[in-house]
Length: 370
Ligand code: HEM
Ligand code: HEM
Image (cartoon, rainbow, N blue to C red; front, side, top):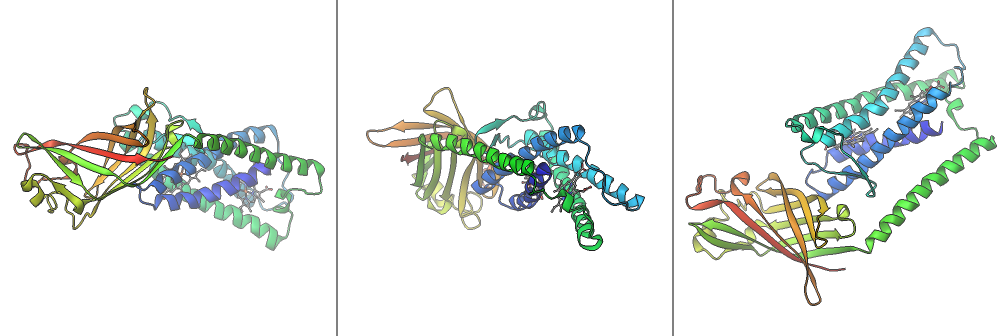
C-alpha cells in the first residue's frame, strides 16, 4: 500500500510535469533544470518499481473480496499487468532517450547523485534517431499509461461508489493498526532524513558558489581579407552561478543584443546588421544557455557545454571558462571558434571564404561576485 500510493503520487505528477516541461523552450535554463528534476523523480520511480516487484513476488495480495464476473477479474489482471509494465517502460524509455541524446546532458539525481548513461548508446552513429525514437516511445507510453489509469481509477471509484464493496477501502491504510502507523511514520521519517542529507550536502556546497549578473563584454574576431578584424557587442548580459566545488551545479546564460554590434572596420559596420548577417530586425537577440559545466584538471578552468542560438539556429558549443583573479575582483573569461556558415551568417553575400573567413572567434569576459 505504501509503495502503491507513494508511486501513484509520483507517477501522476510526472505525467503532468513531463508534459509541461516538454512544452517549454528547450534552450531555456528553466527547461534544463526542470528536466533534471523530472529525471530525478523518474529514476526514483524506477528504483521503487524494482523494490515493488521484489515485494510483490514475495507477498501474495489478499484474495479479491468480491466475486465479480470472470471478464472483470480478467480485465483487472490485464490492467494491473500493464500498469506494472508501464512503471518500467516509462523510466527506461526516458533513460534510453537521454543516454542516446546528442545533447549529452548528464543526469545528476536531485543535483547530488550522478546517474550514468546506459552503455553503448552514447557511442552510436545513429544516436540522434535512437533518441528521437525513444522520445516517441516515452511520450506514447505516457499516453497508454493515462488511458490505463483512467480505467484503473474509474474501476476503483465504481467499486466504491456504485457497488459499495470493500475494494478501494482495503487499499486504504489501516490507521487503527499500530504496526501500520509505525511503518508509515517510519517511511515518512526516512524520506525526510534522505531529503535533509541531500539539502545539507547542497547547502555546504553553496559556500563555493559564485554568481554573476549584469553586463558582460562580448566581442568577436573575424578574418576579413586575411586581416583579423575585431567587433564588439556593446549590449550583452550574463547571468551565471559558478560552483567551483561542484561544477555540474553551475549554470550560465548570456543574451546579446544583436543591434548593439559595432566593428572597427567601416565596411563590416555598414552591413553587419543586415538580413544576410545578424538580421537584427528578425533576430534582435543571440543567446547562449549552458547545459552542463564540467571540471577540468585545472581548478581555475571549467569546461562549459551548451547551446548557442544565433538567427534562431541552435548549435551545441563547448569552451573552457577561466576564472581569473584580479586585485580585488574576479573575472570569468573565455573564447571559442564558430563556423559562421552554421548560423547562415553571410551565406548570400560571402558564400566562400575569399573575403570573410569561415571561422569567427567569439570572446567574453564578465565580473564574478561572491
Ligand atoms: C488515484 C489513483 C489510484 C487509485 C484510486 C488506485 C486504486 C487501486 C486499488 C483500489 C487497488 C486494489 C485493487 C485490489 O484490491 O485488487 C489498486 C491496485 C493496483 N494499482 Fe492502483 N490506484 C491508483 C493509482 C495507481 C497508479 C498511478 C498505478 C501505477 C501506475 C497503480 C497501479 C496499481 C497496480 C499495479 C495494482 C495491483 C496491485 C497488485 O495486486 O499487485 N495504481 N489500485
Ligand atoms: C514514471 C516515470 C516517468 C513518467 C510518468 C514520465 C512522463 C513523461 C511525459 C508525459 C513527458 C512528456 C512527453 C511529451 O509530450 O513530449 C516526458 C518527457 C520527458 N521525459 Fe519523462 N517520464 C518518466 C521518467 C523519465 C525518466 C527516468 C527520464 C530520464 C532519465 C525521463 C526523461 C524525459 C525527458 C528528457 C523528457 C522531455 C522530452 C522533451 O523535451 O520533449 N523521463 N516524461
